[in-house]
Length: 174
Image (cartoon, rainbow, N blue to C red; front, side, top):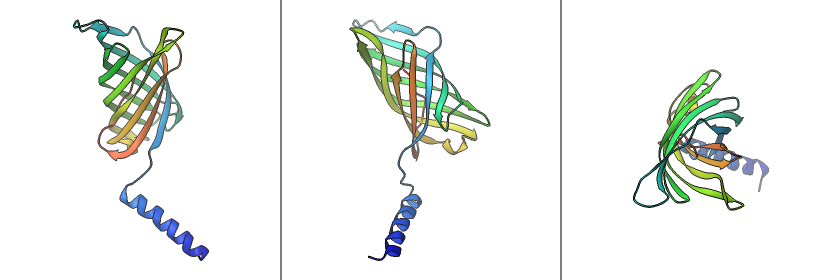
């Protein structure tokens, strides 16, 4: 096969993929976060270990588009023993020249044990960037996926990946 033909086919295919809106998920950023204040745990009362947990947190962007950004967020989740379901959450991302507002749309989590003691929570889910302006304007209305992993007492990392499609996007939290 002619080398020019192969290059033409590859370039045309990439152009077609871009034109149809099909895109691989792209990392928006990784943040290093810490819980602000006390975690609120309210027993639901129907059985042991069933509770609502509310958390406020603050993050600093470590990598990607969010490097240097400040993120202030909160989440509310329902826990049945070591398994949790995120009910609501969101926050504000502030970066030089830009702002974004996030909304958590779904998520699940589980308690991680180390040496027989709780060592943090791993969680993941989906969200929506409801609004974005300035340097973050391209994220406005985009769906995202998020993943949180423990990084020490009261600390966690948060990885945000854009789905590239309009819909839901959001904040994430432990």
